[in-house]
Length: 282
Image (cartoon, rainbow, N blue to C red; front, side, top):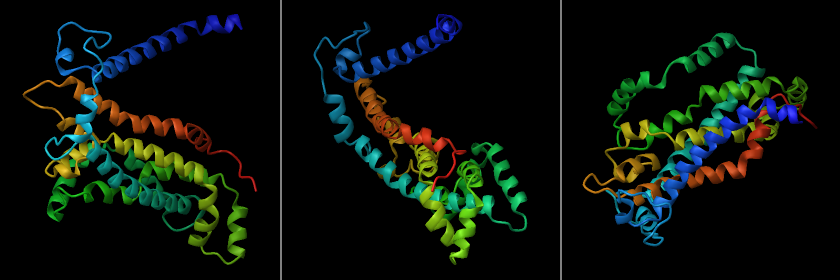
């Protein structure tokens, strides 16, 4: 045991140092959010609020109008735009992954190769084209550029779910076909219920990525303040003529709490769903 500790002592030291750096930055953000505006702008740093704890920054972040938005509106827009579109896209991705894994049709391998190859292309390369297309459709300033692409499915989801569906025994499909189910019936009534864990994992990963997305809302929603997501709200929650550090820190911490709670509530599901090679028990 002692040899094991000595062997990995350097690794533990590096991880501990990195953790302390992160916790130090988090502590500064939290303690600043509870300071008054005047104290936060002092040149001298205070480890604790000397003017007392103030909740003004949190109240303002959720209630004041900052150009048509605030943290509450940003969180509401994020949930309303991303959750339904990701759910639809998850179903489309799951159906596509099932087809690539268990169905035989002409061009299947070529289509799958092209689909996965698209993951190698940087997303930013299509920004100009998306702007031109959505502007021609009149979608700029509406939620459709954010929602519609995610409803079409995602290559990463298809790749992950296909690996899971490949591991499923073919006897499940044969039994369903004998009972008279079509491929869609087999997927909806047999495959979908037993793939809840990997589907939840993919939903969580997709939602985290969408929640932290800044570029798409910046390109397509800036002109409509009432539709700004939480990340765009944080960017526009700044007064160019006055430094309000408590407000900034309070908004950032409030926006991080949903992701923190999501991780705490789903970490076991995520670990279970990542084990795509687990056997299916009847």
